[in-house]
Length: 501
Image (cartoon, rainbow, N blue to C red; front, side, top):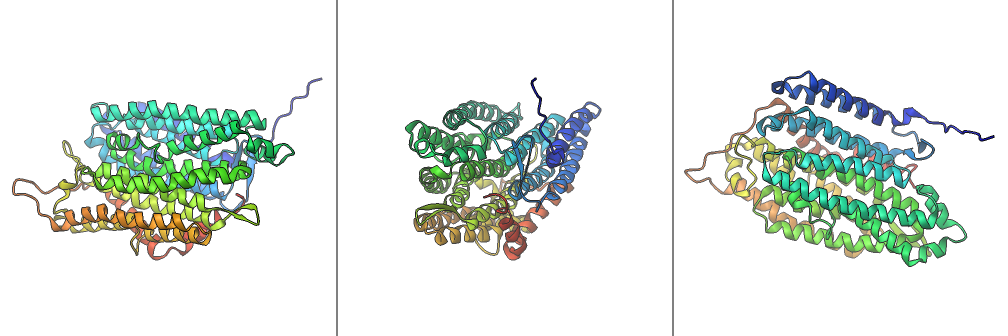
Protein backbone atom coordinates (compact mmCIF):
# COMPACT_ATOMS: atom_id res chain seq x y z
CA UNK A 1 0.00 0.00 0.00
CA UNK A 2 1.36 3.39 -1.00
CA UNK A 3 2.18 5.49 2.04
CA UNK A 4 1.90 9.24 1.73
CA UNK A 5 4.52 11.07 3.78
CA UNK A 6 3.63 14.63 4.67
CA UNK A 7 6.76 16.68 5.41
CA UNK A 8 6.94 18.64 8.63
CA UNK A 9 6.50 22.28 7.59
CA UNK A 10 7.43 25.00 10.08
CA UNK A 11 5.41 27.94 8.79
CA UNK A 12 6.85 30.18 11.50
CA UNK A 13 10.17 30.21 9.62
CA UNK A 14 8.44 31.76 6.60
CA UNK A 15 6.50 34.41 8.52
CA UNK A 16 8.13 37.36 6.65
CA UNK A 17 7.20 35.83 3.29
CA UNK A 18 3.68 34.88 4.39
CA UNK A 19 3.16 38.34 5.87
CA UNK A 20 4.43 39.93 2.67
CA UNK A 21 2.01 37.87 0.56
CA UNK A 22 -0.85 39.03 2.78
CA UNK A 23 0.38 42.63 2.52
CA UNK A 24 0.40 42.46 -1.29
CA UNK A 25 -3.21 41.24 -1.29
CA UNK A 26 -4.18 43.99 1.17
CA UNK A 27 -2.53 46.64 -1.01
CA UNK A 28 -4.34 45.40 -4.14
CA UNK A 29 -7.71 45.32 -2.38
CA UNK A 30 -7.20 48.73 -0.77
CA UNK A 31 -6.29 50.16 -4.17
CA UNK A 32 -9.84 49.40 -5.37
CA UNK A 33 -11.38 51.69 -2.77
CA UNK A 34 -8.97 54.64 -2.93
CA UNK A 35 -9.43 57.48 -5.41
CA UNK A 36 -6.65 58.40 -7.82
CA UNK A 37 -5.92 61.56 -5.83
CA UNK A 38 -5.29 59.55 -2.64
CA UNK A 39 -3.20 56.67 -3.95
CA UNK A 40 -0.39 57.72 -1.62
CA UNK A 41 -2.43 56.16 1.18
CA UNK A 42 -1.77 52.79 -0.45
CA UNK A 43 1.94 53.57 -0.27
CA UNK A 44 1.65 54.49 3.41
CA UNK A 45 -0.04 51.15 4.17
CA UNK A 46 2.72 49.36 2.23
CA UNK A 47 5.37 51.28 4.19
CA UNK A 48 3.86 50.42 7.58
CA UNK A 49 3.49 46.77 6.59
CA UNK A 50 7.09 46.52 5.39
CA UNK A 51 8.42 48.05 8.63
CA UNK A 52 6.44 45.51 10.68
CA UNK A 53 7.72 42.64 8.52
CA UNK A 54 11.31 43.88 8.97
CA UNK A 55 10.82 43.61 12.73
CA UNK A 56 9.34 40.11 12.31
CA UNK A 57 12.34 39.05 10.20
CA UNK A 58 14.76 40.55 12.72
CA UNK A 59 13.16 38.37 15.42
CA UNK A 60 14.53 35.28 13.62
CA UNK A 61 18.14 36.39 14.16
CA UNK A 62 20.41 34.09 16.15
CA UNK A 63 18.37 30.90 15.93
CA UNK A 64 20.94 28.92 13.97
CA UNK A 65 20.33 27.25 10.61
CA UNK A 66 16.80 25.84 10.38
CA UNK A 67 15.14 24.31 7.33
CA UNK A 68 11.51 23.82 6.32
CA UNK A 69 9.42 22.83 3.28
CA UNK A 70 11.31 19.56 2.98
CA UNK A 71 14.71 21.34 3.11
CA UNK A 72 13.84 23.61 0.18
CA UNK A 73 13.97 26.61 2.50
CA UNK A 74 16.55 27.64 5.07
CA UNK A 75 16.58 30.37 7.70
CA UNK A 76 19.97 31.32 9.11
CA UNK A 77 21.71 34.55 10.09
CA UNK A 78 22.74 35.33 6.51
CA UNK A 79 19.18 35.04 5.18
CA UNK A 80 17.80 37.06 8.11
CA UNK A 81 20.39 39.80 7.59
CA UNK A 82 19.56 40.02 3.88
CA UNK A 83 15.80 40.04 4.51
CA UNK A 84 15.99 42.82 7.10
CA UNK A 85 18.18 44.94 4.82
CA UNK A 86 15.98 44.35 1.76
CA UNK A 87 12.86 45.28 3.74
CA UNK A 88 14.62 48.38 5.13
CA UNK A 89 15.61 49.34 1.58
CA UNK A 90 11.99 48.82 0.48
CA UNK A 91 10.62 51.01 3.28
CA UNK A 92 12.99 53.86 2.41
CA UNK A 93 12.23 53.45 -1.31
CA UNK A 94 8.51 53.79 -0.62
CA UNK A 95 9.15 57.02 1.28
CA UNK A 96 11.17 58.29 -1.68
CA UNK A 97 8.39 57.21 -4.03
CA UNK A 98 5.38 58.91 -2.40
CA UNK A 99 6.09 62.43 -3.69
CA UNK A 100 7.93 61.34 -6.85
CA UNK A 101 4.95 59.27 -8.03
CA UNK A 102 2.71 62.34 -7.87
CA UNK A 103 5.18 64.49 -9.81
CA UNK A 104 5.68 61.89 -12.56
CA UNK A 105 1.95 61.02 -12.65
CA UNK A 106 2.52 57.33 -11.86
CA UNK A 107 0.77 57.38 -8.49
CA UNK A 108 -1.06 54.07 -8.85
CA UNK A 109 -1.60 51.30 -6.33
CA UNK A 110 -0.09 48.79 -8.73
CA UNK A 111 3.27 50.54 -8.32
CA UNK A 112 3.48 49.55 -4.65
CA UNK A 113 2.06 46.09 -5.32
CA UNK A 114 4.71 45.32 -7.94
CA UNK A 115 7.41 46.63 -5.62
CA UNK A 116 6.23 44.21 -2.92
CA UNK A 117 6.05 41.34 -5.43
CA UNK A 118 9.71 41.92 -6.31
CA UNK A 119 10.61 41.97 -2.61
CA UNK A 120 8.81 38.63 -2.14
CA UNK A 121 11.09 37.11 -4.76
CA UNK A 122 14.15 38.56 -3.03
CA UNK A 123 13.18 37.06 0.33
CA UNK A 124 12.71 33.66 -1.33
CA UNK A 125 16.14 33.96 -2.96
CA UNK A 126 17.76 34.79 0.38
CA UNK A 127 16.38 31.58 1.97
CA UNK A 128 16.53 29.33 -1.06
CA UNK A 129 18.14 25.99 -0.12
CA UNK A 130 17.49 24.42 -3.51
CA UNK A 131 18.29 25.53 -7.05
CA UNK A 132 14.59 25.51 -7.93
CA UNK A 133 13.69 27.69 -4.95
CA UNK A 134 16.40 30.18 -5.87
CA UNK A 135 15.26 30.27 -9.49
CA UNK A 136 11.59 30.79 -8.60
CA UNK A 137 12.56 33.65 -6.30
CA UNK A 138 14.82 35.17 -8.94
CA UNK A 139 12.11 35.08 -11.61
CA UNK A 140 9.50 36.55 -9.26
CA UNK A 141 11.91 39.37 -8.51
CA UNK A 142 12.97 39.89 -12.12
CA UNK A 143 9.53 39.96 -13.75
CA UNK A 144 8.34 42.52 -11.20
CA UNK A 145 11.42 44.66 -11.77
CA UNK A 146 10.85 44.60 -15.56
CA UNK A 147 7.40 46.10 -14.98
CA UNK A 148 8.70 48.69 -12.51
CA UNK A 149 11.42 49.86 -14.91
CA UNK A 150 8.83 50.53 -17.62
CA UNK A 151 6.22 51.97 -15.26
CA UNK A 152 6.44 55.52 -16.66
CA UNK A 153 4.43 54.60 -19.75
CA UNK A 154 4.33 58.20 -20.98
CA UNK A 155 8.14 58.31 -21.14
CA UNK A 156 9.76 56.67 -24.21
CA UNK A 157 13.01 56.15 -22.28
CA UNK A 158 11.21 54.18 -19.59
CA UNK A 159 9.41 51.97 -22.11
CA UNK A 160 12.66 51.35 -23.98
CA UNK A 161 14.51 50.56 -20.77
CA UNK A 162 11.86 48.07 -19.67
CA UNK A 163 11.86 46.31 -23.05
CA UNK A 164 15.67 46.04 -23.18
CA UNK A 165 15.86 44.77 -19.62
CA UNK A 166 13.10 42.23 -20.24
CA UNK A 167 14.66 40.80 -23.42
CA UNK A 168 18.17 40.56 -22.00
CA UNK A 169 16.89 39.37 -18.63
CA UNK A 170 14.89 36.56 -20.20
CA UNK A 171 17.97 35.45 -22.15
CA UNK A 172 20.12 35.54 -18.99
CA UNK A 173 17.49 33.59 -17.02
CA UNK A 174 17.62 30.88 -19.69
CA UNK A 175 21.40 30.70 -19.35
CA UNK A 176 21.14 30.38 -15.57
CA UNK A 177 18.44 27.71 -15.81
CA UNK A 178 20.48 25.72 -18.32
CA UNK A 179 23.42 25.78 -15.91
CA UNK A 180 21.13 24.48 -13.15
CA UNK A 181 19.82 21.76 -15.48
CA UNK A 182 23.35 20.55 -16.25
CA UNK A 183 24.13 20.51 -12.53
CA UNK A 184 21.03 18.42 -11.87
CA UNK A 185 21.97 16.06 -14.71
CA UNK A 186 25.35 15.28 -13.18
CA UNK A 187 24.49 15.40 -9.46
CA UNK A 188 20.97 13.93 -9.57
CA UNK A 189 19.54 16.57 -7.25
CA UNK A 190 18.75 20.27 -7.12
CA UNK A 191 19.29 20.48 -3.36
CA UNK A 192 22.22 22.76 -2.55
CA UNK A 193 23.42 20.46 0.24
CA UNK A 194 22.69 17.42 -1.95
CA UNK A 195 24.92 18.76 -4.74
CA UNK A 196 27.79 19.12 -2.24
CA UNK A 197 27.23 15.53 -1.10
CA UNK A 198 27.30 14.33 -4.72
CA UNK A 199 30.71 15.96 -5.20
CA UNK A 200 31.92 14.46 -1.92
CA UNK A 201 30.88 10.95 -3.01
CA UNK A 202 32.98 8.35 -4.74
CA UNK A 203 32.36 9.77 -8.24
CA UNK A 204 32.56 13.40 -7.21
CA UNK A 205 36.07 13.96 -8.54
CA UNK A 206 35.04 12.76 -12.01
CA UNK A 207 32.00 15.06 -11.98
CA UNK A 208 34.13 18.06 -11.03
CA UNK A 209 36.52 17.37 -13.92
CA UNK A 210 33.85 16.74 -16.55
CA UNK A 211 33.94 19.42 -19.30
CA UNK A 212 30.13 19.60 -19.50
CA UNK A 213 29.86 20.17 -15.75
CA UNK A 214 32.49 22.88 -16.02
CA UNK A 215 30.43 24.43 -18.82
CA UNK A 216 27.38 24.31 -16.54
CA UNK A 217 29.35 26.13 -13.85
CA UNK A 218 30.32 28.83 -16.37
CA UNK A 219 26.64 29.27 -17.25
CA UNK A 220 25.79 29.72 -13.56
CA UNK A 221 28.49 32.37 -13.23
CA UNK A 222 27.20 34.14 -16.35
CA UNK A 223 23.59 34.07 -15.12
CA UNK A 224 24.45 35.58 -11.76
CA UNK A 225 26.84 37.97 -13.47
CA UNK A 226 23.95 39.42 -15.45
CA UNK A 227 21.77 39.94 -12.39
CA UNK A 228 24.67 41.67 -10.60
CA UNK A 229 25.56 43.66 -13.75
CA UNK A 230 29.16 42.45 -13.76
CA UNK A 231 31.17 43.47 -16.81
CA UNK A 232 30.78 42.29 -19.56
CA UNK A 233 27.20 41.33 -18.60
CA UNK A 234 26.32 44.91 -17.70
CA UNK A 235 25.05 46.25 -21.04
CA UNK A 236 21.44 46.47 -19.88
CA UNK A 237 22.17 48.48 -16.73
CA UNK A 238 22.90 52.06 -17.89
CA UNK A 239 19.75 52.22 -20.05
CA UNK A 240 17.58 50.50 -17.43
CA UNK A 241 18.78 52.76 -14.62
CA UNK A 242 18.38 55.89 -16.75
CA UNK A 243 14.86 55.11 -17.96
CA UNK A 244 13.41 53.69 -14.75
CA UNK A 245 11.65 55.91 -12.16
CA UNK A 246 14.43 57.22 -9.92
CA UNK A 247 13.20 55.57 -6.67
CA UNK A 248 13.06 52.25 -8.54
CA UNK A 249 16.59 52.83 -9.83
CA UNK A 250 17.83 53.31 -6.27
CA UNK A 251 15.87 50.28 -5.09
CA UNK A 252 17.26 48.09 -7.89
CA UNK A 253 20.82 49.21 -7.28
CA UNK A 254 20.69 47.99 -3.68
CA UNK A 255 18.02 45.35 -3.06
CA UNK A 256 18.77 43.26 -6.15
CA UNK A 257 22.43 43.08 -5.12
CA UNK A 258 21.50 41.88 -1.62
CA UNK A 259 19.31 39.04 -2.89
CA UNK A 260 21.58 37.97 -5.75
CA UNK A 261 24.79 37.96 -3.69
CA UNK A 262 23.08 35.94 -0.95
CA UNK A 263 21.94 33.32 -3.47
CA UNK A 264 25.33 33.31 -5.23
CA UNK A 265 27.25 32.75 -1.98
CA UNK A 266 24.91 30.01 -0.81
CA UNK A 267 25.12 28.12 -4.09
CA UNK A 268 28.85 28.46 -4.75
CA UNK A 269 30.12 28.18 -1.16
CA UNK A 270 27.82 25.35 -0.06
CA UNK A 271 27.15 23.39 -3.28
CA UNK A 272 30.39 23.80 -5.23
CA UNK A 273 33.37 23.75 -2.84
CA UNK A 274 34.78 20.88 -4.94
CA UNK A 275 34.99 23.26 -7.92
CA UNK A 276 36.00 26.32 -5.90
CA UNK A 277 39.29 26.89 -7.71
CA UNK A 278 37.52 27.08 -11.06
CA UNK A 279 34.66 29.41 -10.12
CA UNK A 280 36.95 31.52 -7.95
CA UNK A 281 39.23 32.14 -10.93
CA UNK A 282 36.26 33.16 -13.08
CA UNK A 283 34.95 35.50 -10.40
CA UNK A 284 38.45 36.98 -9.88
CA UNK A 285 38.61 38.02 -13.52
CA UNK A 286 35.05 39.35 -13.50
CA UNK A 287 35.73 41.30 -10.30
CA UNK A 288 38.81 43.04 -11.67
CA UNK A 289 37.18 43.80 -15.03
CA UNK A 290 33.99 45.09 -13.38
CA UNK A 291 35.82 47.45 -11.01
CA UNK A 292 37.93 48.86 -13.84
CA UNK A 293 35.18 49.21 -16.42
CA UNK A 294 32.55 50.63 -14.09
CA UNK A 295 34.80 53.37 -12.73
CA UNK A 296 36.51 54.27 -16.01
CA UNK A 297 33.24 54.44 -17.99
CA UNK A 298 31.66 56.66 -15.32
CA UNK A 299 34.25 59.38 -16.01
CA UNK A 300 32.83 60.13 -19.46
CA UNK A 301 29.20 60.55 -18.36
CA UNK A 302 27.46 63.92 -18.37
CA UNK A 303 24.18 62.53 -17.02
CA UNK A 304 24.25 62.23 -13.25
CA UNK A 305 21.86 59.29 -13.26
CA UNK A 306 23.92 57.47 -15.89
CA UNK A 307 27.12 58.22 -14.01
CA UNK A 308 25.62 56.67 -10.86
CA UNK A 309 24.61 53.68 -13.00
CA UNK A 310 28.21 53.03 -14.08
CA UNK A 311 29.31 53.72 -10.52
CA UNK A 312 26.92 50.95 -9.44
CA UNK A 313 28.72 48.57 -11.79
CA UNK A 314 32.01 49.42 -10.10
CA UNK A 315 30.50 48.81 -6.67
CA UNK A 316 29.21 45.42 -7.82
CA UNK A 317 32.87 44.61 -8.44
CA UNK A 318 33.78 45.65 -4.89
CA UNK A 319 31.01 43.45 -3.48
CA UNK A 320 32.16 40.50 -5.57
CA UNK A 321 35.70 41.06 -4.30
CA UNK A 322 34.48 40.02 -0.87
CA UNK A 323 33.06 36.83 -2.34
CA UNK A 324 36.33 36.04 -4.15
CA UNK A 325 38.65 36.69 -1.21
CA UNK A 326 36.49 34.51 1.05
CA UNK A 327 38.08 31.45 -0.54
CA UNK A 328 41.62 30.32 0.23
CA UNK A 329 43.59 27.11 -0.17
CA UNK A 330 45.49 25.91 2.90
CA UNK A 331 47.59 22.71 2.62
CA UNK A 332 45.76 21.81 -0.56
CA UNK A 333 42.34 22.09 1.09
CA UNK A 334 39.74 24.72 0.13
CA UNK A 335 38.56 26.84 3.06
CA UNK A 336 36.24 29.82 3.30
CA UNK A 337 37.12 32.89 5.32
CA UNK A 338 34.71 34.45 7.81
CA UNK A 339 36.21 37.91 7.27
CA UNK A 340 35.43 37.87 3.54
CA UNK A 341 31.78 36.92 4.04
CA UNK A 342 31.26 39.48 6.80
CA UNK A 343 33.00 42.14 4.67
CA UNK A 344 30.43 41.53 1.92
CA UNK A 345 27.58 41.89 4.42
CA UNK A 346 28.89 45.14 5.90
CA UNK A 347 29.71 46.66 2.52
CA UNK A 348 26.20 45.96 1.25
CA UNK A 349 24.74 47.54 4.38
CA UNK A 350 26.88 50.65 3.90
CA UNK A 351 25.94 50.72 0.21
CA UNK A 352 22.24 50.63 1.14
CA UNK A 353 22.37 54.02 2.88
CA UNK A 354 24.90 55.58 0.54
CA UNK A 355 23.47 54.71 -2.87
CA UNK A 356 19.85 55.24 -1.90
CA UNK A 357 20.93 58.64 -0.60
CA UNK A 358 22.65 59.56 -3.86
CA UNK A 359 19.56 58.70 -5.90
CA UNK A 360 17.41 60.38 -3.27
CA UNK A 361 19.13 63.69 -4.06
CA UNK A 362 17.79 63.44 -7.62
CA UNK A 363 14.29 62.91 -6.24
CA UNK A 364 14.73 65.90 -3.93
CA UNK A 365 14.98 68.29 -6.90
CA UNK A 366 12.47 66.53 -9.16
CA UNK A 367 9.42 68.51 -10.17
CA UNK A 368 7.03 68.45 -13.10
CA UNK A 369 8.99 68.86 -16.33
CA UNK A 370 12.36 68.87 -14.53
CA UNK A 371 14.43 65.99 -13.18
CA UNK A 372 17.93 67.42 -12.63
CA UNK A 373 19.52 64.39 -14.31
CA UNK A 374 22.44 66.30 -15.85
CA UNK A 375 25.52 67.18 -13.82
CA UNK A 376 25.41 70.76 -15.13
CA UNK A 377 21.94 71.21 -13.59
CA UNK A 378 23.55 71.09 -10.14
CA UNK A 379 25.66 74.23 -10.52
CA UNK A 380 25.63 76.30 -7.35
CA UNK A 381 23.17 74.10 -5.49
CA UNK A 382 25.56 73.82 -2.56
CA UNK A 383 25.45 77.59 -2.18
CA UNK A 384 21.70 77.97 -2.68
CA UNK A 385 20.76 75.00 -0.47
CA UNK A 386 23.66 74.39 1.98
CA UNK A 387 22.10 71.47 3.88
CA UNK A 388 21.15 69.63 0.70
CA UNK A 389 24.62 70.26 -0.71
CA UNK A 390 26.29 68.87 2.42
CA UNK A 391 24.05 65.78 2.34
CA UNK A 392 25.06 65.12 -1.28
CA UNK A 393 28.73 65.55 -0.35
CA UNK A 394 28.34 62.96 2.43
CA UNK A 395 26.89 60.42 -0.01
CA UNK A 396 29.54 61.11 -2.67
CA UNK A 397 32.41 60.83 -0.18
CA UNK A 398 30.96 57.56 1.08
CA UNK A 399 30.72 56.19 -2.46
CA UNK A 400 34.37 57.12 -2.94
CA UNK A 401 35.41 55.53 0.36
CA UNK A 402 36.47 58.68 2.22
CA UNK A 403 36.27 58.84 6.06
CA UNK A 404 34.30 59.28 8.25
CA UNK A 405 31.59 57.63 6.16
CA UNK A 406 30.17 54.11 5.85
CA UNK A 407 31.84 53.61 2.47
CA UNK A 408 35.29 54.12 4.00
CA UNK A 409 34.79 51.41 6.65
CA UNK A 410 33.23 49.09 4.08
CA UNK A 411 36.14 49.38 1.65
CA UNK A 412 38.71 49.19 4.45
CA UNK A 413 37.13 45.94 5.62
CA UNK A 414 37.05 44.54 2.08
CA UNK A 415 40.66 45.43 1.32
CA UNK A 416 41.77 44.06 4.71
CA UNK A 417 40.06 40.76 3.89
CA UNK A 418 41.78 40.68 0.48
CA UNK A 419 45.22 41.34 1.97
CA UNK A 420 44.70 38.87 4.82
CA UNK A 421 43.87 36.10 2.35
CA UNK A 422 46.75 37.15 0.03
CA UNK A 423 44.71 38.57 -2.85
CA UNK A 424 47.15 41.44 -3.21
CA UNK A 425 46.51 42.23 -6.87
CA UNK A 426 42.76 42.40 -6.35
CA UNK A 427 43.22 44.73 -3.38
CA UNK A 428 45.57 46.93 -5.44
CA UNK A 429 43.09 47.16 -8.33
CA UNK A 430 40.29 48.04 -5.94
CA UNK A 431 42.39 50.72 -4.25
CA UNK A 432 43.39 52.32 -7.56
CA UNK A 433 39.81 52.28 -8.83
CA UNK A 434 38.62 53.91 -5.61
CA UNK A 435 41.06 56.73 -6.30
CA UNK A 436 39.80 56.97 -9.89
CA UNK A 437 36.20 57.17 -8.68
CA UNK A 438 36.99 60.27 -6.64
CA UNK A 439 37.60 62.11 -9.91
CA UNK A 440 33.98 61.90 -11.06
CA UNK A 441 32.54 62.13 -7.55
CA UNK A 442 34.77 65.16 -6.94
CA UNK A 443 33.57 66.71 -10.18
CA UNK A 444 30.02 66.78 -8.79
CA UNK A 445 31.22 68.39 -5.55
CA UNK A 446 33.03 71.03 -7.58
CA UNK A 447 29.86 71.74 -9.58
CA UNK A 448 27.86 72.03 -6.35
CA UNK A 449 30.09 74.64 -4.76
CA UNK A 450 32.54 76.14 -7.26
CA UNK A 451 30.45 76.78 -10.37
CA UNK A 452 27.75 79.45 -10.63
CA UNK A 453 24.53 79.21 -12.56
CA UNK A 454 24.01 81.46 -15.58
CA UNK A 455 21.85 84.54 -15.29
CA UNK A 456 19.05 82.86 -17.23
CA UNK A 457 19.19 79.65 -15.17
CA UNK A 458 16.82 79.49 -12.23
CA UNK A 459 17.98 77.91 -8.99
CA UNK A 460 16.53 74.44 -8.44
CA UNK A 461 13.87 74.29 -5.77
CA UNK A 462 13.75 71.38 -3.34
CA UNK A 463 10.75 69.25 -2.50
CA UNK A 464 9.23 69.93 0.90
CA UNK A 465 7.44 66.56 1.21
CA UNK A 466 7.78 65.31 4.84
CA UNK A 467 8.21 61.67 3.74
CA UNK A 468 11.10 62.57 1.44
CA UNK A 469 12.75 64.78 4.07
CA UNK A 470 12.49 62.01 6.68
CA UNK A 471 13.98 59.44 4.29
CA UNK A 472 16.93 61.69 3.47
CA UNK A 473 17.63 62.35 7.15
CA UNK A 474 17.65 58.60 7.83
CA UNK A 475 20.04 58.00 4.91
CA UNK A 476 22.46 60.74 5.97
CA UNK A 477 22.45 59.60 9.60
CA UNK A 478 22.91 55.97 8.57
CA UNK A 479 25.84 56.81 6.28
CA UNK A 480 27.62 58.73 9.03
CA UNK A 481 26.68 56.33 11.84
CA UNK A 482 28.19 53.33 10.07
CA UNK A 483 31.34 55.36 9.41
CA UNK A 484 31.83 56.83 12.90
CA UNK A 485 30.44 54.03 15.10
CA UNK A 486 30.72 50.86 13.00
CA UNK A 487 31.28 48.45 15.90
CA UNK A 488 27.79 46.99 16.41
CA UNK A 489 27.16 46.86 12.66
CA UNK A 490 30.43 45.00 12.11
CA UNK A 491 29.37 42.52 14.80
CA UNK A 492 26.08 41.97 12.98
CA UNK A 493 27.97 41.45 9.71
CA UNK A 494 30.25 38.92 11.41
CA UNK A 495 27.18 37.16 12.80
CA UNK A 496 25.98 36.35 9.27
CA UNK A 497 28.61 33.61 9.06
CA UNK A 498 27.09 31.60 11.94
CA UNK A 499 25.34 28.50 10.61
CA UNK A 500 26.14 29.36 7.00
CA UNK A 501 29.35 27.45 6.25
